[in-house]
Length: 429
Image 1: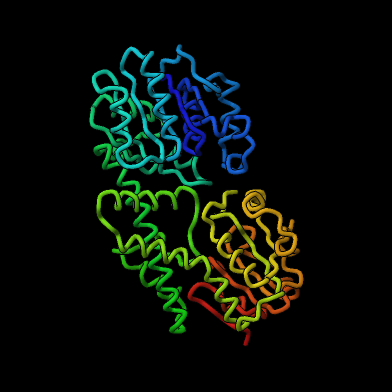
Image 2: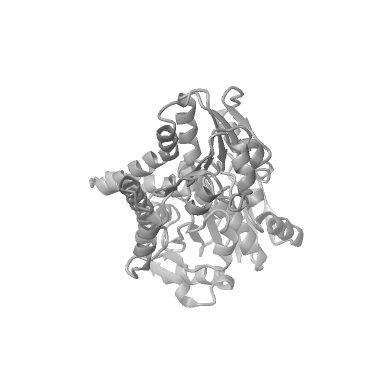
């Protein structure tokens, strides 16, 4: 098929790489705000497994063309939109341009993070007699985008016509040998389902963080509680790990979109508000534990931080807990030494140069030299098994604050460190 993809989101890059890989003739038009000359240099794309290699390979093979504009000769079978909420005007302009020169049979696939109802609105721009529109909500996760696209567990397929469905099934046939991978529903239902899924996942995380706070108060190790809850088949273990808050551009954005949908429909969600409030407060939990340990005596102290990205495997820091944590630490005059294998450029762009209160370290142990405490914020794999004897010799106050509960409290305490996790703690005997 001839496919025209528009956008500079992760979904656009993944679709361009994957669809051209299996033989479709793909034109990729990145958004003007992030043209290919800039996009190919961004850290999140460079770090995404397989994507850049496949993009370069497809360009060499002739199945992928990356362009800066689309001329009147462009007559694709499929127009695939992967845009951010602020780029809806770009979608309208391209839809009008393509539709004007298209004889009929165009299938518009809305893979964008647009509000609920946008696929129907876009359908009204192209007409419904000879053109078709499909909602295919973005289900990708950073760090796993290629695998999730090429070996999907399912697609939410929002369509109201058999022609649109059959075209999308054929477009993605190489990745869907099982027909049950597609879950068909009306367009608006698919868009809302995507938001509802992330709302439920966020609710589980925030609820578990509330339980962890209660466990702290009662002197209970929350790991026992988590295992007991997860063993209940009605609950399961997914998204049941307490931590210092979630972030990321897509997850956070989807929650705000769900809140907007609630508000615009005249329904106020106290539950969703609480989920968001709990998460924002949880981003300060490591600071509060530091404050409690030193009884508020923080001015002039030095803290090492391991991890800044909102999750392992990405260089992005949008809505990441580290941003809230840095503000709280700096307000108390705490010096921060930070290590992250990927996100330092993004963090530097966000907070600027802070030579007085922020130092970037090339080595995780270098960040700990002479520090009063170590905070684990992002659970990169290189942090999971540190040299404990070395850490104990580097940290002045031997305090480890584990924001992701990846360490064994009793083992850490046995190495001479004070351990403080989320609903877990241990001290040297």
